Image (cartoon, rainbow, N blue to C red):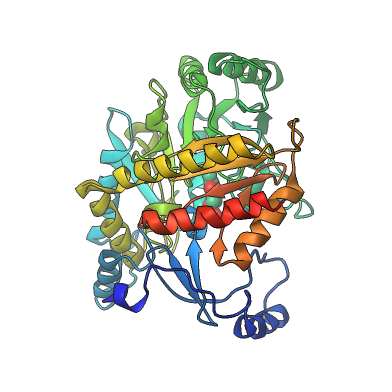
Length: 444
Ligand SMILES: *Cc1c(COP(=O)(O)O)cnc(C)c1O
């Protein structure tokens, strides 16, 4: 049905953006706040699998999945059916007033599949930033402490609290008023840029020393860390970094929050990226992007006693855990549970890893290839150095976009191209998109 409407193939029928997109963009510029960005102003009308169709009929290969949201694929049949069925039955009550079953079902799924062999509970919200905000509230309430430690290159959102937790002030926080108090930034493990040979435990010790000297543990409620950093450029910490940190935290009564908003939900070939590091034991997880096929919903899941520390009425919100979004989440989670989704992420890793490493061997502008599953990136440098090469990234991205391949950038130095395809992408489409990327690199 939907498949036959949108063939999984790239098609260029006009310049990109074409005339219809350009006309829409003109309307947008006069109607929409200039504070909202525009990476590629082609206006999308429909999508399926890994193909986006724009207002001019171009078919674009999607390597970004709306920043890792559409992992299950655009217009996944089971998600569409679940949403259609739910929307005709019930769209809102407010769970804290009169509850409904699928909110509970999403929580049961998350309690079961987040790592950690202990009793867990969950609460649902609307966005990743809202989940992070609530994890911080919950950790503070449970510990009766205030301090929050975050890491260099981190990204946690655009609300007042979460922009204060980001590494980069620009563009997320600068000029938007006072930052939140009691947030401390400490060094991350960044194998490509750390001193040669620095191990994970050594990088963790560097962070711990910083925490002990600069922050102190007396008032430290939680450390919040992305097990694989997203916006920071898909930094995979050196082995042992996360375990050493969580061991230290637990020895000191500090809660460990894994921000899995981007790397969670089958993106890296496991339910949660935290599972890749043995001995890493987060107490709380924040979950959002890939969970509901694009419907807005997020969660905090974790140790029952921590999740229950908040008084009744302290957590929640009008729309949090909306029944339509929850129905979509159940449809996604059931497919992962059924099997094949994590496996697909690993097949995508095999293709990405082979192709990107071949590019690294051939083109000295490609300094590093890293990531896990369907979450991989290449970092561009000036050949023969580690100096960030943003102009090279800009040129490759421009080439990709004008050839109907949507690809995203990342990184503190804006010198990383990240690959976050829908897991529904076919091998053929992925290779075709990578051919376009390689062509862009070869033209530098
Ligand atoms: C995207 C993201 C957020 C913020 O999520 P929103 O839904 O945009 O508020 C938080 N943490 C991480 C790791 C993210 O990638």
